[in-house]
Image 1: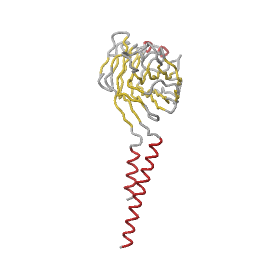
Image 2 (image 1 turned 90 degrees about the vertical axis):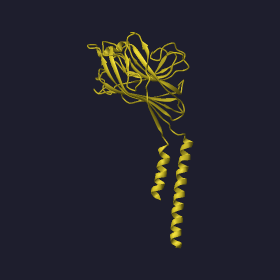
Image 3 (image 1 turned 45 degrees about the vertical axis):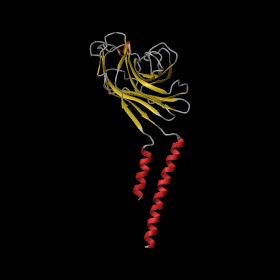
Image 4 (image 1 turned 45 degrees about the horizontal axis):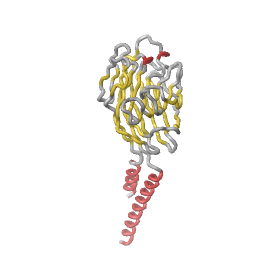
Length: 273
């Protein structure tokens, strides 16, 4: 009987924090200032931007649609994935000025890529720290632009001798709705020891809690020949309201009580026999 009670308790709490992860596919070029960028694997979660020729993937952006999510208090939305960076030979790392960006956005009823709301994180450079920006409304610039944005926090490197250079990287951008806004955190790390110091920031002036787009930017100063993305996904973790937690606990207690009563009745029958 005890094992049945424990199994029932486990089944109750197994659904307390469901996480729904979905690969992001259907990539579209949102900016192509050079008018020659190559995008392959667009229908997969591992697209490739650029064909490897000199600077084919610079000064451009891509985005994809995912099912619209409106965050409730406690919910966490996380963008994650990897990318392999290949830049033009001989260019100084200081020229790569905080121009790799990744973000979660709300299309905000816009008919094009202008006017999107949401957040994006960026890499650093020798002259600029990494950070997370909020896109404001109204604005006339695309989601990839720093125009019409507010820098919410700057992030520093664990080891400032490391640079944003050719390597394979992992990244995340996480948004958790709070009672007063959105708690933001981001990570970026490569196989050569480049990594952010972990930190977070609560944006109490959030202008949207709805998200339905993922976007990436490869800036003009990044001089990228190719970006090979991998396993791009959006994960929604839903946290029950405090009242729901109380109901879960009451349910567990009711199950335990019922199990104990059943065990007591069985003992009583054995005693009478």
